[in-house]
Length: 342
Figure 1 (cartoon, rainbow, N blue to C red):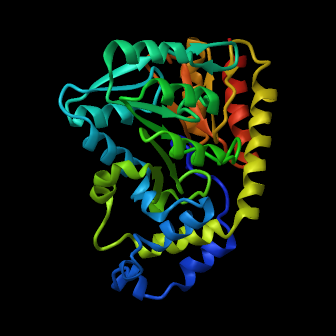
Figure 2: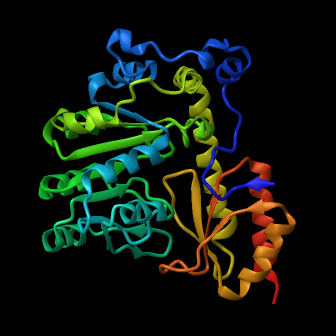
Figure 3: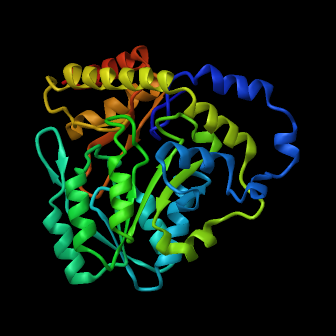
């Protein structure tokens, strides 16, 4: 089965990660972390602090970005408080808000021929009207693949001072690897958290490591998020190995970008098919409604699993992870065969 439905990494892991899996001592499993002896949260937060030149205390660590999102929403949202998210956003955002009886508000997204976009003024209007406690921006956004510029993000942060701005950068690395905004945002704006993960660009979804950057003002939440007995030590070693394998991941990122270009060139000429621009490791595609039954049958026959959408304005759309060239070619054939039939 080709699992192309959850935006997972579809390529080989770097040799250093394989070596860690094959040769790790059993003590990584039988003993707790001793990072506390160095007054550190973990070995991975120490490395991240060094890479980004940000104090280790201001770095959050969790079991995937999902865990950190849950912590943040549960901590900052009380019953009846608003959380503002994109119209087409990851369904999980709303689920977390529902868990604490928060109210989910949506800002609109606009669909052009081959892209989705957001109007910052719409977000500001909703903020000034409803005063949400959290504004959650996925950048790039799942499932639409679009992203806001740093200037647009800063406009939102600056003009929404009473809201916690959660910027979910889970798909960082596939479009660009810039980090300059981290220092600027954290220095100037205390109402911001920037989240990242090892699940997407680094391909370590199964080890469940997410991390984030938060202003020191939120010391109470920083303490809330700490784990006295540490984190998964084997996962930490794999994450460190991934950070040591920059050349490998850069090559995989270029492959993903080239394969996205193939999606555009192979499918955009088909009647009724739209492949939307993406800054992530997936693409969103729409097809005519009469094509869907045959397309689903073709995917099933080819053992390809994708994510179909049925509501929220994305009817007849599906999201698919970028895979190896030979698998992508199989996807193209499934779509072309479905579209060509009367």
